[in-house]
Each structure stands twice: as C-alpha cells, then as structure tokens.
Image (cartoon, rainbow, N blue to C red; front, side, top):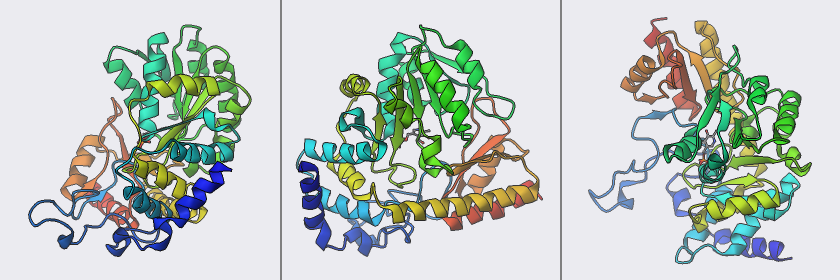
Length: 389
Ligand SMILES: Cc1ncc(COP(=O)(O)O)c(C=O)c1O
C-alpha cells in the first residue's frame, strides 16, 4: 500500500508536530483571512514591501477570482513540511499520491490524471497539442487565455460562436459547426466571465455527441462552487469512454491560486499524450499542499459559505439598484452597471477597489470577484455612490 504509507509518512513528519510561522504571523486558517501584511521584522529593513504578495495595503482585490479564505490550514501545514524538502525535486511518489487521491474521488485510474502548475499549464499544453489539428471551437466569451497562448504562437486558430441572447453557451450552434477537422471544442462550465452553469442534461448530451467527432475539453475551474458539482461535471463522460478532457484547479474553492496546482482528467491515452507537452515541474510545495487539503471538507464548506455570503450581498446590492446581472454559480458576478465596464473599473480604482474591466466588446458588462467579506462590503457601498443612486 505505497499510497497509505506515503500519506502516513507525510502527516506524521515535520508537518504534524508544528505550529507554522505563517500561522504565528496571522496568515493562516480558514477563519483567518490570508491577505494581511507580514510583520515588519520578517523582512530585511528596506528590502521588501510587506505587501509584496497578496493585495496591496488598503486594496480590496476583487478582480482575479481568487479565494482569500485559503489556503486551508491543512494545506499550510503540508507546505511548511514541503519547504524543508525544497532542496529536492518533487518525488514521483508525491505526484502519484495526489493523482491517486483525485483519481479515487473521480472514479478513474491515477494514470488518467495529469497534474500541473495550476490548470493554466495543462490547458496551455492541450491548446498546443490540439490547436495544430484544426480550429479550437469555443463560445465567443470563455476563459480564452490558454487558447490565445497557442493562437499567438501561430499554433491554433480560435473559432468563436456567439452566445445565446441570455449570455449562455449556444450548444446547438457550436455543435452545428463541429466537423472532423475541428481540432478541439473548448467549453468552460461554469463559464468565465458569465458565471453561468449550463443545464446538465442538455450540456452532457451535446458534449457526448460532439465527442463522437472531435475531442471536447471542459474547463471546470469553478465546478466545486456550483450548486450541484456532481450533476454538473463531465467527468462521468470520461468514465463512459467519450473523447472528453476535464480540467480543474486548486486555485478557486481551495484558495491556492498562488501555490499553483491544477489537473486534467482524460482517458489514459489522452493523458499520456498531454503529459510530454507540459512545460515544467510543479514545486514540491504544490503537491504537498494539494495532498493536505484535497479531502478537507470543513475548509471546502467554509470556503463555499463565505463565497456564497459575498455573492448574496452583491446580488442584493444589484437588486436594490435594479441592475441586470447573471445568476452566477461561481465566485464572481457579471453585471451591467449602466456606465460601462472601464469607467466603473476606474471609479472603483479611485477607492482602492480592484474589479475587472471590459471583456472584448462587452462594454456594458463588469465582473466583480468575491473577496473578503469586508472588501465585498466596500464594493457594495461604493457602487451606489459611484452611480449616484
Ligand atoms: C475558467 C478558468 N480556467 C482556468 C483558470 C486558470 O487557473 P489556474 O491556472 O490558477 O488553475 C482560470 C483562472 O482564473 C479560469 O478562470
């Protein structure tokens, strides 16, 4: 049982017995917001800004879909242990331990899991692998950073399909464009920046049909935040043998955007094809953190509850102001302020509140992420003031 042995060894090692320096600095724990400055004495005088990492002093960081309630204490303990082993490249056993945990929960084999430095890396590898085979077919609005990465290298072309009138993914229109020459269909569910989750039965039926002709990639970065992650996920389609790849991340519900752990689940053959295209090796701290918190349901529940609390506050503010918004099932809300995304972003920035600016030609739509509750409160108070409401 190498899996059990390695887990026990990790948990009874240095990590188990100590209180971390970070905890002492007030940076840890699910009830303790992580985004605070380190005490001055932690830095050589004048050398490093105490706000070197995380939000700057006084800034409400609501633009990057991070989860400030992470990392979980269970992850931090493992990071401290892993840092003491930082002289060494991460062992294959650490990779396999985390892959086995993910595989077990998803009902697949560990060789069907590809671990990377955030899901961005595996998504980039997938774009590099499939882009040269034909166009990447996607909704007009999706998290396109990694498809653009391949496109900017001349290795992919993105074919964007307009959204439905209510900003959903137009599945019939995408399906109608799938041919044997399509390199990849890329869908993001829940979608970013809309925050919308597709209706599960309809979505999965369309993915099944499209996967009979080409590979379908479903980016599930925010799936754990949706109301019913099990029902919404396309992982069962992989188990059924369809040509589907699902990617997920520890950056969102697990609050580890800066630690960099993500993964893809696919058939063993597809995973074996993706692995050599992955550009780097994850830090030992990433694998360790993932192992530490993957099953931390207390933290996950806490994280979700804080995100939903913030989201409800934003919904209530938008309702009061009579503004349109999409019913997000994520840690961000896409809404129309009536003054344009870029002017609103600038007005918020004057108040040290960071939100997203305009996407493509969606000039009216703004995206605000759920941060610490006090930061969401600042947004909710500032919005009517800026709009003169
Ligand atoms: C939909 C989606 N997928 C993937 C990512 C990449 O995240 P990471 O590389 O941190 O896993 C993001 C980042 O915001 C995202 O919004």
